[in-house]
Image 1 (cartoon, helix red, strand yellow):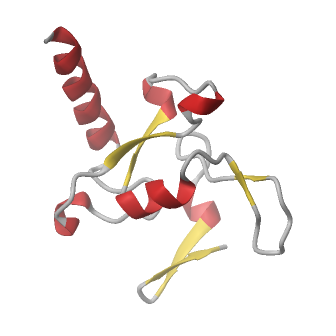
Image 2 (cartoon, rainbow, N blue to C red; image 1 turned 30 degrees about the horizontal axis):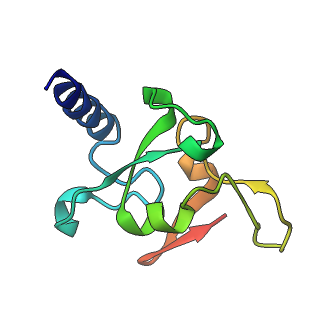
Image 3 (tube, rainbow, N blue to C red; image 1 turned 120 degrees about the vertical axis):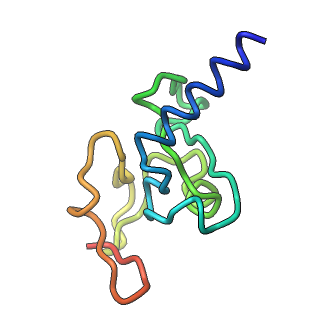
Length: 105
């Protein structure tokens, strides 16, 4: 039972830190009607931990799209570019909204 309580406390801390928004697309959890995922920024399969600094609140779409990746292809087609890390990167340096569409900068 203690493990479950710790898990709920950790989830609450992650949700509060993220202002209950997806840390990738900034979509508010409350308006979606679904509970967001606790994403491992560095996936467990790549030796990521359950420490707070490695956890991010992610909507199901962002979490599924990111999956277990830490690298991706940039807008110029270059492979092995590090994906956005909400603990290290400034969101406004990487994204912008164009009307209602999230865009890469």
